Length: 622
Image (cartoon, rainbow, N blue to C red; front, side, top):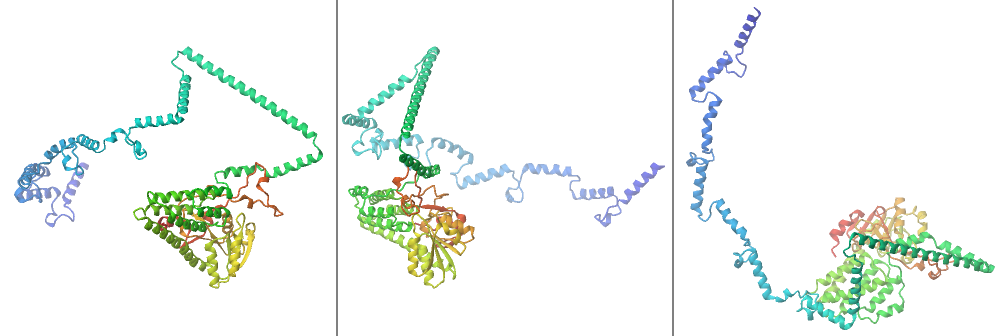
């Protein structure tokens, strides 16, 4: 009974499954099977395939024909793909019969590639040749033009009287000259002796037993050498001990006055001969030492025609410190170049003769005092200008060089300083206390301009040895009527409390933002930074350099050590009286790092020190 009830329920559910909302109204009373039969009858009347399988089977032959779709023109729809390709090939051959199929063209190109007849760069009369044939052709042409090249006659370094000879002929020629002069005989004999020694030292083909005996003899010789060396060493130590004992015996017989003198002398040497001094000198050994020029040394160069007398005068001014700043030295150097260029006698080429003369004079100046980075950059620019003037006549070239030097002085030094003063004096406000270190042309003009505009301010001039340049600036500011106070570098920590701004002049600004200035500027900037006082650096753009220097020991300059050696009684100590193991270090420059600089003023405006590399890359046009 239970099975009959379940079957009845299923039949009722089938009857009820007449579809949902998607079924049209005329089919809602039907079951699924009735609707399927209904749709099959409709499709069978329209002529469509009753199943999907039948539809796929009917479509397959159409795909095999590949008669195209909507893109194929109407007159080609009944064709297959291959028939359409053949049709289009015939049309192309009728339009341009020169062009053939791609396969045929590639097959024809292959033998051309094997021949390597060249492309568009090959001349027309050589296009039918291969690479080897063209090489042979060019070799024959070269042999016809200059047959001497086969003989290895040398290049521009070979003298004119030997250019027609080969290498072997030139060697024989030089050997004959050496034999005539007698210089080559000694060298030949020495070379023969060396070769004989080497051949004697080399062990010939030996058996194992012979090699063992040979090496045993060598070891015996080495041991004998060691024994002799030890004997000599022991004999030397015994002699030293005897000499020390003799000296001790002699000191016992000395008088009391001599003992007191001997006791006083080593005390001085103990104070002066400090081992720390030796470490300093080892660090600064690569820096050229100070040499004071004498008239005897300078008199030797008067006989030479290459060195101008004005260079000798200028070297004395550089070494003595009369012209000490970088701008002053650059101006003097450029004025010297103008005179040298106007007085040069041209023999071969203008550029070669001028550069030779400049190099001789520059080397002479560097002997007496080292150049700064800015001076080397100025020399480099002048040499570049000389190389561009070869096409002109000699008079025109000289005049053009002098005009370029004058324009450089006007644009990059004089006008730049005026623009910096106009920008910088506005930063001085009434009631400011400005700290200045050493002496600077730009800072002097800035303070003068601010005083002319009637701004009430006060200046503190800080100075230190060995140059003592702050005294010169103090006298100039006093003449202008500016209120000034003077102090040494060791008192800056007490005075910095009163200061509101620090103005510093600099010799060079490097690409990493650090500045090279007179020794002591780094201490001033460090103390100002610790007490939160702004440090303003004033520098024209021609003092910018692409180089990087992390400390003051990489490249520096030694000053006169006599200026440092002073006692409490203001009596100078002569260097000759110092002990032999003591060296005086007197450096002139130091490096202030970028962290201690708050602002840089150039003719281009106010800039942070981090943007110096951009300024060097974009605006440094000389």
